[in-house]
Length: 572
Ligand code: PEP
Ligand code: MG
Image (cartoon, rainbow, N blue to C red):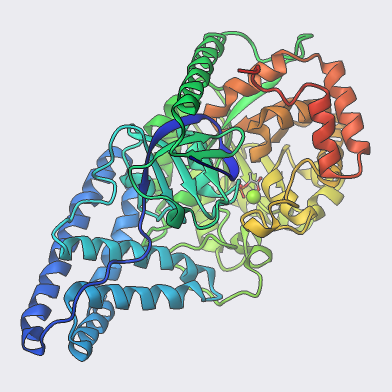
């Protein structure tokens, strides 16, 4: 038995067997020089069968998930078709007299290592693609072409340094009980997806793949961050009892679905849905929510070999709108830049991409034509559905008005009405200029993921700054309160749509600060509603006053615990 503690990033309890993802590629034995010619032929056949395999995968993913997800594999196909990789492998094979799989492994390791050091986030992200492709080629070379997840058995807990791009669509989520990674921020997209799928996840455990081997029994607690490796029998029994009580509790809570989301004294709180990759499952879950508070649209652009057309976008947004009849759908314009650059966009390296050409700054500059196309698609859908347009990374009135001018002009050309246009407040500048912004915005959303990172100068994805990265820091809470007060004073809707909204304790604090609209992954709504229903507004307001006056994040956490808000679930 061994107990390690990481950081819980998706709630839930999992009892399963480890499936360790190997990040390093297997090595083999040297070849006699006479075999080189035959080995090069074999290598070419390996490439052919990997390409055929990718094609099949692409069409399966297209059917099961949609065109967007299938594009990831179209991009992999492009890399496989690029002769440079094959030539490099052949050169290694010839000069070192090694087997095809060893030449592939060496070549891929080399490429991946170079990419991981690149300043350019576009190239850094491609490191994962290259490793993904390398794994596929090696599986074909070794005669095991199927995915590294194909052998997934019921209740598998995936363990790895990090998940690769194709992992999320290739794995069979019905068999997946949990995820443990070494590197992954709480607000990273893997974490957001795990929560959307309702799969418990932990991160921040150093050398996790070295510590574990596949097949070991694991108990994963997505609330406390604890991972028990090869538990004692008594621990296993206790955990199973706890899991059983949790399941019963969740079912009981689910049966409260029809109850309104309100505080104990009847103040109504609106729970909205965040959507990141709207597939069947996400749309089904969102359809029970009051509205869509945030539809991220980057998935339409990332991993695509071409920017999506107006028609493609209209189709997708309409598909989402049809699942939410009569309800509002808040669609965020593309938030590209920073660490999110699509395959079709080459761009110069930036010293600090998080503070670089991103969000609206990108949309109003290099990304202008993509922005105009997207605005046209959004306007067309708004003719028949209740769409509102949300602008990311606004700094103040200048950029907001520049974006609005484009929206108004395109709407005029199409003879359509301008839908509500809102601002995602996620920079300190937007907080400081909130009054001026509200003169021109119809609504505001609070993007606490980025706001926290910028207020506290602490990277939202980096593990070494995670202790300082907390929305519970009094400075962040004061920023939230300032925006909330300003919007409430003008009767304009204000919604928190960062990950904080889906955390029951923080959601309770946000309500105490004056927030009445919380947008989150639908899978998180049950515990949030349950906590809000068990506290009166007065108690939450008192809590918020104390938190605002506190001097540190740790003091705010103590205040929340002392008030009994920290118990999002009864003691099991
Ligand atoms: C945020 O920053 O809080 C937000 C909602 O946007 P994203 O997480 O996509 O950056
Ligand atoms: Mg953001």
